[in-house]
Amino acid sequence: MPGRLLAVDQGTTSTRALLFSAAGVPLASARRELPQHFPRDGWVEHEPERLVADAVACAREVLAAAGLGPDALRAGAVAAVGVTNQRETVVLWERASGRPLHRALVWQDRRTADACARLRAAGHEPLVQQRTGLLLDPYFSATKLAWLLDHVPGARARAERGELLAGTVDAWLLWNLQGGAAHGARHLTDATNASRTALFDLSAQRWDDELLALFGVPRALLPEVLDSVADFGATEPALLGAALPLRGVAGDQQAAAVGQACFQPGQIKGTFGTGAFVLLHAGERAPRSRHRLLGTVALRLSGVSAYALEGSIFSSGSAVQWLRDGLGIIARSPDSEALARRAEPSRRVHLVPAFTGLGAPHWDAGARGAILGLTRDVSAADLCAAALQATGFQTADLLAAMAADGAPAPAALRVDGGLSDNGYAMQFLADACGVPVERPACAETTALGAALLAGLGAGVFASTAELSALWRAAASWEPRMPASERDERLAGWRAAVARVRAQA
Image 1 (cartoon, rainbow, N blue to C red):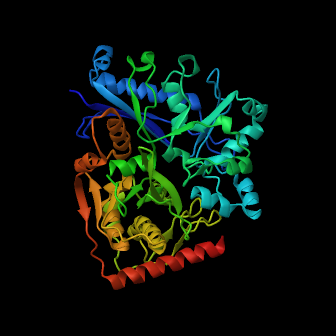
Image 2: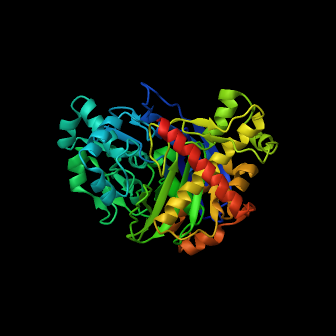
Image 3: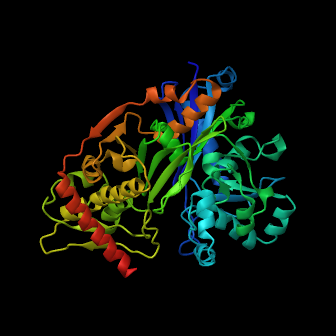
């Protein structure tokens, strides 16, 4: 069957590969857990070699499960490969040998918080936000890369001589999937990933010399920036049994937006996992948020960028994990739905899950979690409901910030991620935000997005309109809460957040 598409999905806690039909139906999948390394408090690292090895192993497993050997692959059984990845994480490696010089610094890593604070105190954040749409925060790649150059012996001098390369996880995977320097690999990334580094000018769509100088990053390190659908080379034949075209690349949240068919201004998707990421398609003009949301490239096709406003929630499903692992009031995360339904509806208990601070629109790293409204009759069910409601409240805050930035009210919020399977959480999300919530038939939206981009690059699809036609809703939730109750509940939530921030 022609037109099959292979997606490599390299995430923060696992690496996966999925094979899709041309209709966007998953045919086979494989997964490897990814160990995390925590050398110090606030430091998070990955082994770069593990990222590559697991990606190749998963791809081989998927192809074997589908019965696709070298002969079938050489005959075109897989039209193209797409890559999607954890964003902002950076790798530094030798150009000639491909040997990484340090573990990858993960997007969660906070070791450069002091560097960001110094740059902020020196008045540089307005420049960074104006050029990149981002803020001065360790979350983004620039200060991580500068840290590697300053702490790996000899790295800065070698970088200046052109001996080293650096990039986000997509660039590292692409380099290795092409076979590295020995096979003439090109050093490549796509515009969505470049837009997460704090080194990329959103409007000019190029690496910015002033920002490179500010952060101390030599241009020679950085990859060439291509469209999200482009010729990224081909896999080295020995890796998967044939040279498979690499034709689509996007950061994980942008890939999920593609999988959710969010191609028109005003369309919005939310991915609800450990944290949550809400992306609103903002059209072809780079957004400038006045409410501390992020401007980012949603997709770049044929040299034309579509942009997004993004809000990041640090703790979503992690609140449920805390109920399970920290408090022991549920045995499995899915049990939270049934328990929450037993909560007393009139109670106003607020769990503010600022376990690692608050994300957008607050960006308050010092805030810490709290439970407010406790009385003697508050039950485990009430706490469970409050944990699930927190995601709805935080998302409502993001939509309010987007509206204040001039974004139109969305017709519906398309959801994915583990928490989207929780009917109680999704109904409360619809109620808190006052918009319908839709969950797609294909739950693998991130990998699907990468596969669809590869399909565009391989000619399996002619346009994004064809991709939109593949999208189907499997479940939906309409707002049922009266507007007066919604306003009252949101006011209580925001008062709770204010108390948490006041104590930070």
